[in-house]
Image 1 (cartoon, one colour):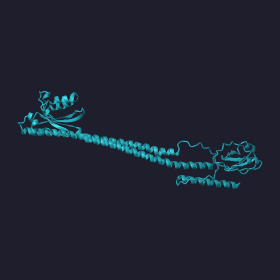
Image 2 (cartoon, helix red, strand yellow):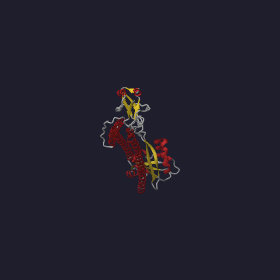
Image 3 (tube, one colour):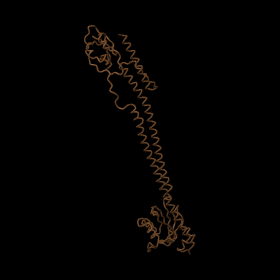
Image 4 (tube, one colour):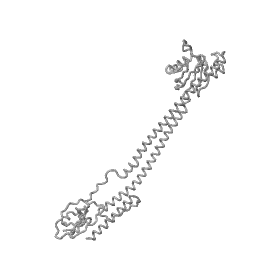
Length: 395
Protein backbone atom coordinates (compact mmCIF):
# COMPACT_ATOMS: atom_id res chain seq x y z
CA UNK A 1 0.00 0.00 0.00
CA UNK A 2 1.04 3.59 -0.73
CA UNK A 3 0.09 6.27 1.75
CA UNK A 4 -0.83 9.73 0.43
CA UNK A 5 -1.43 12.79 2.59
CA UNK A 6 -3.33 15.86 1.34
CA UNK A 7 -1.33 18.93 2.27
CA UNK A 8 -4.40 21.14 2.19
CA UNK A 9 -6.70 19.38 4.66
CA UNK A 10 -4.48 16.56 6.06
CA UNK A 11 -6.68 13.72 4.72
CA UNK A 12 -4.74 10.38 4.60
CA UNK A 13 -5.30 7.85 1.81
CA UNK A 14 -3.96 4.24 1.56
CA UNK A 15 -4.01 3.34 -2.11
CA UNK A 16 -2.97 0.38 -4.23
CA UNK A 17 0.35 1.21 -5.99
CA UNK A 18 -0.64 -0.81 -9.04
CA UNK A 19 -3.81 1.17 -9.42
CA UNK A 20 -1.82 4.40 -9.20
CA UNK A 21 0.67 3.12 -11.78
CA UNK A 22 -2.24 2.80 -14.17
CA UNK A 23 -2.75 6.55 -13.82
CA UNK A 24 0.85 7.41 -14.61
CA UNK A 25 1.23 10.22 -17.11
CA UNK A 26 4.89 10.61 -17.88
CA UNK A 27 6.87 10.39 -14.64
CA UNK A 28 4.04 11.08 -12.21
CA UNK A 29 0.49 10.07 -11.28
CA UNK A 30 -2.24 12.48 -10.22
CA UNK A 31 -5.33 12.20 -8.05
CA UNK A 32 -7.60 14.68 -6.29
CA UNK A 33 -8.58 14.90 -2.63
CA UNK A 34 -12.25 14.05 -2.13
CA UNK A 35 -12.52 16.44 0.83
CA UNK A 36 -11.06 19.72 -0.43
CA UNK A 37 -10.36 19.02 -4.11
CA UNK A 38 -6.59 19.59 -3.79
CA UNK A 39 -4.48 17.93 -6.51
CA UNK A 40 -2.12 15.26 -5.13
CA UNK A 41 0.88 14.14 -7.24
CA UNK A 42 3.25 11.15 -6.78
CA UNK A 43 6.33 10.34 -8.86
CA UNK A 44 7.07 7.04 -10.58
CA UNK A 45 10.13 6.51 -8.36
CA UNK A 46 8.04 6.86 -5.20
CA UNK A 47 5.49 4.34 -6.52
CA UNK A 48 8.19 1.81 -7.25
CA UNK A 49 9.62 2.23 -3.73
CA UNK A 50 6.14 1.72 -2.28
CA UNK A 51 6.82 4.09 0.65
CA UNK A 52 4.91 6.99 2.14
CA UNK A 53 5.18 10.14 0.15
CA UNK A 54 4.38 13.80 0.14
CA UNK A 55 3.44 14.98 -3.31
CA UNK A 56 5.45 17.76 -4.98
CA UNK A 57 3.95 21.17 -5.77
CA UNK A 58 2.05 21.50 -9.02
CA UNK A 59 3.43 23.74 -11.80
CA UNK A 60 1.43 26.90 -12.41
CA UNK A 61 0.89 26.34 -16.14
CA UNK A 62 -0.53 22.84 -15.82
CA UNK A 63 -4.23 22.18 -15.39
CA UNK A 64 -4.83 18.85 -13.60
CA UNK A 65 -7.40 16.45 -15.01
CA UNK A 66 -10.40 15.49 -12.94
CA UNK A 67 -9.49 12.64 -10.62
CA UNK A 68 -11.71 9.64 -10.19
CA UNK A 69 -13.22 8.89 -6.83
CA UNK A 70 -11.28 6.07 -5.11
CA UNK A 71 -12.31 3.94 -2.27
CA UNK A 72 -9.92 3.82 0.72
CA UNK A 73 -9.11 0.18 1.57
CA UNK A 74 -8.92 -0.82 5.22
CA UNK A 75 -5.49 -0.38 6.75
CA UNK A 76 -3.90 -2.91 9.15
CA UNK A 77 -2.39 -0.12 11.18
CA UNK A 78 -4.47 2.59 12.83
CA UNK A 79 -4.39 5.74 10.68
CA UNK A 80 -3.60 9.12 12.02
CA UNK A 81 -6.56 11.21 13.14
CA UNK A 82 -8.25 12.79 10.14
CA UNK A 83 -9.00 16.49 10.11
CA UNK A 84 -12.20 17.46 8.46
CA UNK A 85 -12.15 20.54 6.27
CA UNK A 86 -15.16 22.62 5.42
CA UNK A 87 -13.57 23.75 2.15
CA UNK A 88 -15.56 22.77 -0.95
CA UNK A 89 -13.93 21.48 -4.13
CA UNK A 90 -12.83 24.31 -6.36
CA UNK A 91 -14.67 24.79 -9.60
CA UNK A 92 -12.67 25.08 -12.74
CA UNK A 93 -12.92 28.53 -14.33
CA UNK A 94 -14.67 28.79 -17.66
CA UNK A 95 -13.20 32.16 -18.67
CA UNK A 96 -14.57 35.67 -18.43
CA UNK A 97 -18.13 36.02 -19.63
CA UNK A 98 -19.87 39.22 -20.66
CA UNK A 99 -18.23 42.60 -21.23
CA UNK A 100 -14.78 43.35 -19.95
CA UNK A 101 -13.88 46.21 -17.64
CA UNK A 102 -12.51 48.41 -20.41
CA UNK A 103 -15.64 47.88 -22.52
CA UNK A 104 -17.81 48.91 -19.59
CA UNK A 105 -15.63 51.97 -19.01
CA UNK A 106 -16.01 52.97 -22.65
CA UNK A 107 -19.77 52.55 -22.43
CA UNK A 108 -20.15 54.42 -19.14
CA UNK A 109 -17.60 57.19 -19.64
CA UNK A 110 -17.55 57.63 -23.44
CA UNK A 111 -20.68 56.35 -25.17
CA UNK A 112 -23.20 57.56 -22.58
CA UNK A 113 -21.62 61.06 -22.28
CA UNK A 114 -21.41 61.18 -26.07
CA UNK A 115 -25.14 60.54 -26.42
CA UNK A 116 -25.97 63.08 -23.72
CA UNK A 117 -23.65 65.73 -25.17
CA UNK A 118 -24.95 65.10 -28.68
CA UNK A 119 -28.57 65.40 -27.53
CA UNK A 120 -27.74 68.59 -25.62
CA UNK A 121 -25.85 70.02 -28.61
CA UNK A 122 -28.68 69.27 -31.05
CA UNK A 123 -31.23 70.81 -28.69
CA UNK A 124 -29.10 73.92 -28.11
CA UNK A 125 -28.44 74.35 -31.83
CA UNK A 126 -32.13 74.04 -32.66
CA UNK A 127 -32.99 76.58 -29.98
CA UNK A 128 -30.31 78.94 -31.31
CA UNK A 129 -31.60 78.59 -34.88
CA UNK A 130 -35.17 79.14 -33.74
CA UNK A 131 -34.15 82.22 -31.75
CA UNK A 132 -32.27 83.67 -34.73
CA UNK A 133 -35.24 82.96 -37.01
CA UNK A 134 -37.71 84.60 -34.66
CA UNK A 135 -35.54 87.66 -34.11
CA UNK A 136 -34.99 88.24 -37.82
CA UNK A 137 -38.64 87.49 -38.65
CA UNK A 138 -39.90 89.92 -36.03
CA UNK A 139 -37.31 92.51 -37.06
CA UNK A 140 -38.39 92.22 -40.70
CA UNK A 141 -42.04 92.58 -39.72
CA UNK A 142 -41.36 95.63 -37.57
CA UNK A 143 -39.16 97.29 -40.19
CA UNK A 144 -41.71 96.53 -42.89
CA UNK A 145 -44.45 98.12 -40.81
CA UNK A 146 -42.27 101.18 -40.23
CA UNK A 147 -41.55 101.38 -43.95
CA UNK A 148 -45.27 101.31 -44.74
CA UNK A 149 -45.86 104.18 -42.33
CA UNK A 150 -42.95 106.17 -43.80
CA UNK A 151 -44.41 105.78 -47.29
CA UNK A 152 -47.89 106.69 -46.04
CA UNK A 153 -46.62 109.73 -44.16
CA UNK A 154 -44.76 110.86 -47.26
CA UNK A 155 -47.99 110.66 -49.30
CA UNK A 156 -49.95 112.63 -46.72
CA UNK A 157 -47.19 115.23 -46.35
CA UNK A 158 -46.88 115.81 -50.11
CA UNK A 159 -50.69 115.94 -50.46
CA UNK A 160 -50.84 118.62 -47.76
CA UNK A 161 -48.03 120.64 -49.37
CA UNK A 162 -49.72 120.36 -52.75
CA UNK A 163 -53.01 121.58 -51.33
CA UNK A 164 -51.32 124.63 -49.78
CA UNK A 165 -49.47 125.48 -52.99
CA UNK A 166 -52.53 125.14 -55.21
CA UNK A 167 -54.55 127.38 -52.90
CA UNK A 168 -51.82 129.99 -53.01
CA UNK A 169 -51.50 129.70 -56.83
CA UNK A 170 -55.05 129.40 -58.20
CA UNK A 171 -53.88 130.41 -61.66
CA UNK A 172 -51.71 127.31 -62.02
CA UNK A 173 -53.28 124.84 -64.46
CA UNK A 174 -52.75 121.09 -64.48
CA UNK A 175 -50.88 121.24 -67.80
CA UNK A 176 -48.27 123.40 -66.02
CA UNK A 177 -47.85 121.22 -62.92
CA UNK A 178 -44.81 119.33 -64.14
CA UNK A 179 -43.17 122.40 -65.65
CA UNK A 180 -43.50 124.71 -62.66
CA UNK A 181 -40.21 124.17 -60.80
CA UNK A 182 -41.60 124.92 -57.37
CA UNK A 183 -44.73 122.82 -57.77
CA UNK A 184 -42.77 119.99 -59.42
CA UNK A 185 -40.35 119.99 -56.47
CA UNK A 186 -43.32 119.66 -54.09
CA UNK A 187 -45.31 117.04 -55.99
CA UNK A 188 -42.37 114.80 -56.95
CA UNK A 189 -40.23 113.79 -53.95
CA UNK A 190 -38.00 110.84 -53.20
CA UNK A 191 -39.22 108.00 -50.99
CA UNK A 192 -36.55 105.74 -49.59
CA UNK A 193 -33.65 104.86 -51.87
CA UNK A 194 -35.53 104.47 -55.15
CA UNK A 195 -39.16 105.44 -54.52
CA UNK A 196 -40.91 108.68 -55.45
CA UNK A 197 -44.24 110.51 -55.34
CA UNK A 198 -46.41 111.43 -58.34
CA UNK A 199 -49.58 113.44 -58.81
CA UNK A 200 -52.52 112.16 -60.84
CA UNK A 201 -56.11 113.17 -61.44
CA UNK A 202 -58.93 110.79 -60.58
CA UNK A 203 -61.95 110.59 -62.90
CA UNK A 204 -65.45 111.63 -62.03
CA UNK A 205 -68.20 109.21 -61.14
CA UNK A 206 -69.28 108.61 -64.76
CA UNK A 207 -65.86 108.97 -66.39
CA UNK A 208 -63.89 105.94 -67.68
CA UNK A 209 -60.56 104.66 -66.40
CA UNK A 210 -58.76 106.71 -69.01
CA UNK A 211 -59.51 109.78 -66.89
CA UNK A 212 -56.84 108.58 -64.41
CA UNK A 213 -54.07 110.83 -65.78
CA UNK A 214 -50.59 111.69 -64.47
CA UNK A 215 -49.76 115.42 -64.16
CA UNK A 216 -46.50 115.31 -62.16
CA UNK A 217 -43.95 112.52 -62.59
CA UNK A 218 -40.15 112.14 -62.67
CA UNK A 219 -40.49 111.00 -66.31
CA UNK A 220 -41.90 113.88 -68.34
CA UNK A 221 -42.99 111.47 -71.10
CA UNK A 222 -45.78 110.18 -68.84
CA UNK A 223 -47.40 113.61 -68.32
CA UNK A 224 -51.04 113.48 -69.38
CA UNK A 225 -50.87 109.76 -70.05
CA UNK A 226 -53.72 107.56 -68.68
CA UNK A 227 -52.03 105.87 -65.74
CA UNK A 228 -54.02 102.62 -65.82
CA UNK A 229 -53.51 102.04 -69.53
CA UNK A 230 -49.74 102.54 -69.22
CA UNK A 231 -49.52 100.24 -66.21
CA UNK A 232 -51.66 97.59 -67.87
CA UNK A 233 -49.18 97.54 -70.74
CA UNK A 234 -46.17 97.48 -68.37
CA UNK A 235 -47.39 94.85 -65.90
CA UNK A 236 -49.58 92.62 -68.01
CA UNK A 237 -52.90 91.17 -66.94
CA UNK A 238 -51.29 88.86 -64.31
CA UNK A 239 -49.94 91.64 -62.06
CA UNK A 240 -52.12 94.58 -63.14
CA UNK A 241 -55.06 93.28 -61.05
CA UNK A 242 -53.11 93.99 -57.83
CA UNK A 243 -52.52 97.59 -58.90
CA UNK A 244 -56.11 98.07 -60.15
CA UNK A 245 -57.54 96.92 -56.82
CA UNK A 246 -55.74 99.76 -55.00
CA UNK A 247 -56.91 102.34 -57.54
CA UNK A 248 -60.53 101.20 -57.26
CA UNK A 249 -60.46 102.04 -53.55
CA UNK A 250 -58.86 105.43 -54.29
CA UNK A 251 -61.57 106.19 -56.85
CA UNK A 252 -64.00 106.52 -53.95
CA UNK A 253 -62.04 109.56 -52.77
CA UNK A 254 -60.31 108.05 -49.74
CA UNK A 255 -56.79 106.96 -48.85
CA UNK A 256 -55.80 103.56 -50.24
CA UNK A 257 -52.73 101.40 -49.81
CA UNK A 258 -51.40 97.98 -50.78
CA UNK A 259 -48.66 95.86 -52.35
CA UNK A 260 -48.22 95.13 -56.02
CA UNK A 261 -45.60 93.36 -58.13
CA UNK A 262 -43.36 95.43 -60.39
CA UNK A 263 -41.47 93.96 -63.35
CA UNK A 264 -37.97 95.35 -63.82
CA UNK A 265 -36.39 95.80 -67.23
CA UNK A 266 -34.30 92.65 -66.70
CA UNK A 267 -37.46 90.66 -65.90
CA UNK A 268 -36.88 90.57 -62.13
CA UNK A 269 -40.02 90.73 -59.98
CA UNK A 270 -39.96 93.05 -56.96
CA UNK A 271 -42.59 94.00 -54.41
CA UNK A 272 -43.65 97.63 -54.19
CA UNK A 273 -45.82 99.29 -51.56
CA UNK A 274 -48.07 102.15 -52.61
CA UNK A 275 -50.15 104.66 -50.68
CA UNK A 276 -52.64 106.94 -52.47
CA UNK A 277 -53.54 110.06 -50.47
CA UNK A 278 -56.15 112.58 -51.72
CA UNK A 279 -55.38 116.30 -52.02
CA UNK A 280 -58.23 117.80 -50.03
CA UNK A 281 -60.61 120.01 -52.02
CA UNK A 282 -59.38 118.77 -55.42
CA UNK A 283 -59.68 115.81 -57.79
CA UNK A 284 -55.96 115.18 -57.41
CA UNK A 285 -54.21 112.37 -55.53
CA UNK A 286 -50.63 111.85 -54.49
CA UNK A 287 -49.16 108.38 -55.06
CA UNK A 288 -46.24 107.48 -52.80
CA UNK A 289 -44.58 104.23 -53.88
CA UNK A 290 -41.27 102.48 -53.12
CA UNK A 291 -39.63 99.07 -53.17
CA UNK A 292 -40.23 97.55 -49.76
CA UNK A 293 -36.88 95.74 -49.78
CA UNK A 294 -35.14 99.15 -49.83
CA UNK A 295 -36.11 99.26 -46.16
CA UNK A 296 -35.73 95.57 -45.29
CA UNK A 297 -32.34 94.90 -46.93
CA UNK A 298 -30.38 95.66 -43.70
CA UNK A 299 -32.61 93.23 -41.82
CA UNK A 300 -32.10 90.61 -44.52
CA UNK A 301 -28.36 91.06 -44.17
CA UNK A 302 -28.72 90.68 -40.40
CA UNK A 303 -30.69 87.47 -40.97
CA UNK A 304 -27.96 86.09 -43.22
CA UNK A 305 -25.30 87.04 -40.65
CA UNK A 306 -27.33 85.37 -37.88
CA UNK A 307 -27.59 82.20 -39.96
CA UNK A 308 -23.86 82.21 -40.66
CA UNK A 309 -23.11 82.80 -36.97
CA UNK A 310 -25.41 79.92 -35.98
CA UNK A 311 -23.62 77.66 -38.47
CA UNK A 312 -20.22 78.77 -37.15
CA UNK A 313 -21.36 78.13 -33.58
CA UNK A 314 -22.52 74.65 -34.55
CA UNK A 315 -19.18 73.85 -36.19
CA UNK A 316 -17.22 75.12 -33.17
CA UNK A 317 -19.42 73.12 -30.78
CA UNK A 318 -18.96 70.03 -32.96
CA UNK A 319 -15.19 70.53 -32.96
CA UNK A 320 -15.13 70.89 -29.17
CA UNK A 321 -17.26 67.76 -28.85
CA UNK A 322 -14.95 65.73 -31.11
CA UNK A 323 -11.86 66.98 -29.29
CA UNK A 324 -13.41 66.14 -25.92
CA UNK A 325 -14.31 62.66 -27.13
CA UNK A 326 -10.75 62.14 -28.36
CA UNK A 327 -9.29 63.20 -25.01
CA UNK A 328 -11.79 61.11 -23.04
CA UNK A 329 -11.25 58.10 -25.31
CA UNK A 330 -7.46 58.27 -24.95
CA UNK A 331 -7.74 58.72 -21.18
CA UNK A 332 -10.04 55.72 -20.85
CA UNK A 333 -7.84 53.62 -23.14
CA UNK A 334 -4.63 54.38 -21.24
CA UNK A 335 -6.01 54.28 -17.72
CA UNK A 336 -8.31 51.34 -18.49
CA UNK A 337 -5.37 49.39 -19.93
CA UNK A 338 -3.33 49.98 -16.78
CA UNK A 339 -6.18 48.89 -14.51
CA UNK A 340 -7.08 45.76 -16.51
CA UNK A 341 -3.39 44.83 -16.89
CA UNK A 342 -2.92 44.85 -13.11
CA UNK A 343 -6.18 42.98 -12.55
CA UNK A 344 -5.22 40.31 -15.08
CA UNK A 345 -1.79 40.05 -13.49
CA UNK A 346 -3.29 39.61 -10.01
CA UNK A 347 -5.85 37.10 -11.34
CA UNK A 348 -3.08 35.02 -12.89
CA UNK A 349 -1.03 35.23 -9.68
CA UNK A 350 -4.04 34.12 -7.62
CA UNK A 351 -4.60 31.18 -9.98
CA UNK A 352 -0.98 30.12 -9.58
CA UNK A 353 -1.23 30.38 -5.79
CA UNK A 354 -4.45 28.32 -5.86
CA UNK A 355 -2.63 25.37 -7.48
CA UNK A 356 0.19 25.43 -4.94
CA UNK A 357 2.76 27.85 -6.32
CA UNK A 358 3.12 29.74 -3.06
CA UNK A 359 6.40 31.34 -4.11
CA UNK A 360 4.72 33.31 -6.90
CA UNK A 361 6.08 36.85 -6.89
CA UNK A 362 3.57 39.70 -6.97
CA UNK A 363 4.83 42.96 -8.41
CA UNK A 364 2.20 45.68 -8.42
CA UNK A 365 3.28 49.20 -7.49
CA UNK A 366 -0.04 51.00 -7.72
CA UNK A 367 -0.98 53.24 -4.78
CA UNK A 368 -4.73 52.86 -5.13
CA UNK A 369 -7.30 50.11 -4.58
CA UNK A 370 -5.44 47.83 -7.01
CA UNK A 371 -2.32 48.19 -4.85
CA UNK A 372 -4.40 47.36 -1.75
CA UNK A 373 -5.68 44.23 -3.53
CA UNK A 374 -2.12 43.18 -4.38
CA UNK A 375 -1.09 43.64 -0.74
CA UNK A 376 -4.06 41.56 0.39
CA UNK A 377 -3.12 38.72 -1.99
CA UNK A 378 0.48 38.87 -0.74
CA UNK A 379 -0.72 38.62 2.86
CA UNK A 380 -2.94 35.69 1.93
CA UNK A 381 0.06 34.03 0.24
CA UNK A 382 2.17 34.46 3.38
CA UNK A 383 -0.62 33.08 5.56
CA UNK A 384 -0.94 29.99 3.38
CA UNK A 385 2.80 29.39 3.62
CA UNK A 386 2.70 29.62 7.41
CA UNK A 387 -0.35 27.35 7.63
CA UNK A 388 1.24 24.65 5.49
CA UNK A 389 4.48 24.92 7.44
CA UNK A 390 2.63 24.46 10.75
CA UNK A 391 0.77 21.46 9.28
CA UNK A 392 4.03 19.84 8.26
CA UNK A 393 5.55 20.36 11.69
CA UNK A 394 2.56 18.69 13.35
CA UNK A 395 3.18 15.53 11.39
